[in-house]
Image 1: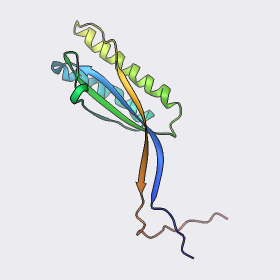
Image 2 (image 1 turned 90 degrees about the vertical axis):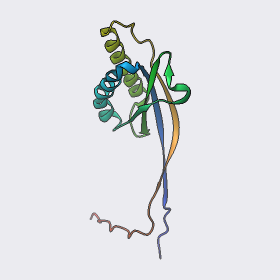
Image 3 (image 1 turned 90 degrees about the horizontal axis):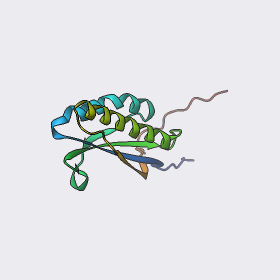
Length: 135
């Protein structure tokens, strides 16, 4: 008898999007934040994508906006607390870097959360790997 299995696997995840401002003249601010929070992100979430915001979120007053996106599978413990810690970490770095340059401290970092479904299509044409029986 041939075993039928679905080629489509799905799981749920949460997409966190963090928005933080920086002045065009302060590209090093955005780079420093990306560098400094990367260790935290790698340890807790495994990785993230950082890019300049566009459209209506592209500007934060006079400053440009960077976007940091993290896709977290639901297996990460305390993910809501972790994203708040990440946002707080970014806010602290922004605050420190801006006050060093004689500017007012940063007041806000925005982040959003969205439930997403991840789909994984497994190639049904690949030979099935033999499993090792434990006896």
